[in-house]
Each structure stands twice: as structure tokens, then as C-alpha cells.
Length: 211
Image (cartoon, rainbow, N blue to C red; front, side, top):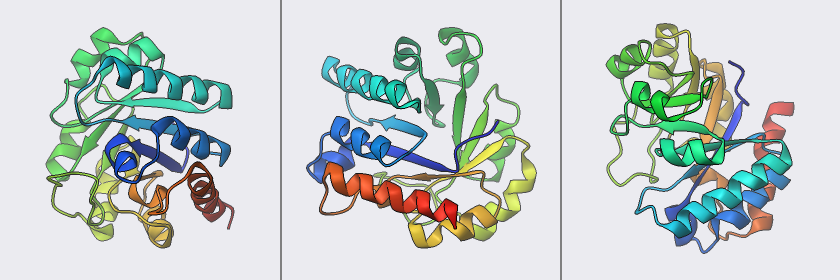
């Protein structure tokens, strides 16, 4: 499958720490030109969270961008989005029972064995990382690095998304190592955060693709 090479992920916890609502952040990312956007929420899923996810999904639809729901197959099905699963989430084959036929599923992996196992799962793309040190998880997996990304690229025919601590200055090396797409969390959200600054940061990422 052809994934956008820049894959922004909006982490609600990070956004809360930096004082920006996820809907406003989504507006900034989409105004900046992103063609895909993942909604990532690692705390309790309340009705308010579903409402926020729904608003982000509608923004994506209006912008002609793909909406991706992290972890929750039920939310993805209700909102008509793609689904991204982690190692401890619902198994991809079980998620398929909830999602409409033909739905797109991504799957996170963190080492060679998990990547090999992912080849046997009914998923459309695989994420691998963390490539660099990341603060977006409380208990992150060991850093893989660019050379390991380059090595494991040959182990799967599925589209491969690199994730974990990737900054603008790292992007070209990560793409050159074989990543079809680069997922960005922390470097998408500046310390001095606003809808405008998120839009500008998105534009900076997309400008890398034009060079």
C-alpha cells in the first residue's frame, strides 16, 4: 500500500501537557497539508474522548485526509477510520471481526521477532521503533536505531512506518534506511504550542519531502 511519507500522530496526553486541545491541533496539522492523521489516546476512553475523536475524524474527512484510530477497533469502526494496534491491544485477526471488510490495519513492532510475526498477521502496514529515544511512552521499548531499521526492512514486504523520537533533522536518514513513512509525535508539537505553530511545524515536515 502507498502510505503518505509523513504520518503525524496526535497524542492527547502530550497535547494536554503543552496546553493545546486535540481538535485544534488536528486543525493545524490538516491546514498544514497532512494527508493522514492518527488519534492516540492512552488513558481512559470516556464519551468526551469519543466526541473528540469524532470531531477529528470529521475534520480529516473534510480535508480529504485519512483518519487513524489508535488501539480501539470499536471507535475505528464507528468513525469509519483506519485502525492502528499495538502489541498489547486486540489481536489484528480479532479486530477484523469488528471492522468492515477491507478496513486498513497498522501494527506496531519493536524488534525482529515481532516484525517477523507481523508478516503472518492480517495487517496492511507495520510500524517499527522506537528508532530514537522517545518520551511519548511511559515505558518505551529499547531504542532500535537507524541501522537496525535498515536491517529489518528486508524482513517484510509490508509497508513500513518508522516511529519513535524522529525529528526533522533525522527524517532523511530514516527514509533512506527504508522507511516508507515516518510517524511523528513529539517533533510535531512545539513547546510553545498553538494551532498556528502546529500548522507551521507540519509545513516544515512536508517541505522536507519537496527537497
